[in-house]
Image (cartoon, rainbow, N blue to C red):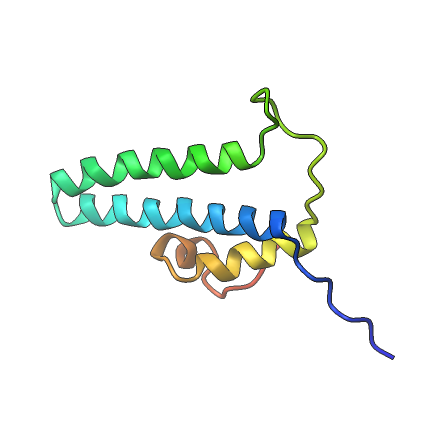
Length: 102
């Protein structure tokens, strides 16, 4: 009998999605630069900072320090984050074959 794959928890899903959001915004910042759309670059750079802050907050305890009580399994989070990131240019650049690579 084959073992069932581990189910991803809500916290693990949230981290994967926040990571993908950072890469989405990084892709948009790159687009603004490569097309010389300076207002778009300005706008999306602020959104990139917000996405990175949201990921930071997701991993933080209420006091703002790293939440060492989080239970995140790299074997589940990393592949989920990479799958989510494939939707964005930066995600495809970092993980061109869509695989874990670790």
